[in-house]
Image 1: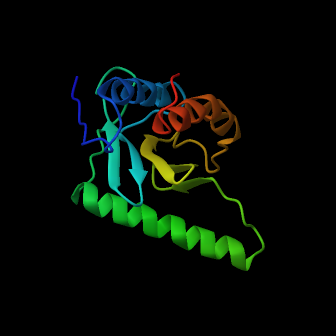
Image 2 (image 1 turned 90 degrees about the vertical axis):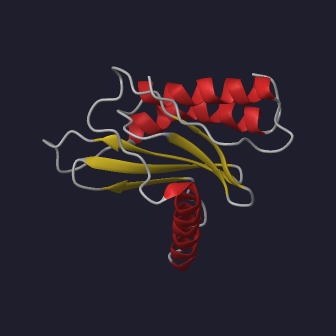
Length: 154
């Protein structure tokens, strides 16, 4: 399949980087992902992007149209805006963000200072999207991503 990967953070071993890429593929068992699964570090840009175009990735492939730098800047700006909005309504913790579009969902998960983000296909027969079970299923994957980014063996 098609693989897209970006330079990894300084100090991350190639073995850890490989494990991180493999673990990010597991997001496809939770969501019908149509884009690379990105890990964004707001300080150092893109850590890794992993995409495998296979039978689990249904629908059209979604690649960022303006490149990694624009994606990083947009996601970081979105997260800052969300945090500011949360503070104005008394909600200080918001570690998950889903934005519903027409037939797709853009998801952002906060993992320490990093952000894991991707697009996925939605069931267009439903007006409302309940991500509660999917968010719960992401916990183990995100815990492993957190450990790998910290350099802890998984």
